[in-house]
Image (cartoon, rainbow, N blue to C red):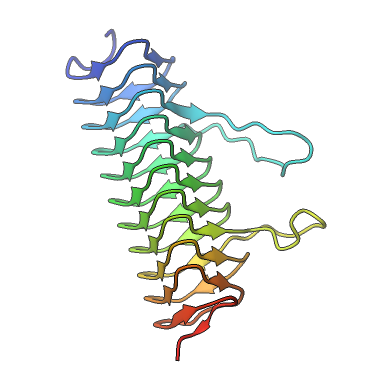
Length: 225
């Protein structure tokens, strides 16, 4: 294709809009849409039916969104599955893997070698460190921080709105520190801090901050004796 390296492989019905930058040895599956100004590094694989570079929308009931003009940046060696959506002003760093049907909103940074599982959702204004694992159907709410090597089990759910829209609140998701592990189906309330290397048991509900190196279980989650 004109203006793109000869080494790229493009499936049927692919749309690449004006200003997109694509590196060497990129593979793009059928029916995928690369929106305006999206930047894709070298040795990247993108599945079928993906959309990269979505501009966020909304209505009056939703939180006001800061308009962003920066493109999606997909760095070298990233693998993206099928039916994945990635919004504008998001950076996916080297060797990240993103599973089928995942959704990654705007203003997100994902660190090197992190895995985002099938159908996981990462909401806006979130920072994810290096070598994290976010498993199938996990929900990482907006305004969240995950430090390096955090493990988020399947179907974990997080919240950033203490009053569930009933009154004004400065939205703030959890802050999960390096090496913490969150078990399947755990729920984490807004603004909670989870310490380094802490383990949260499956099905627990975390309602208050947890220190480093603790093991907590239950509803509400308490330190295991």
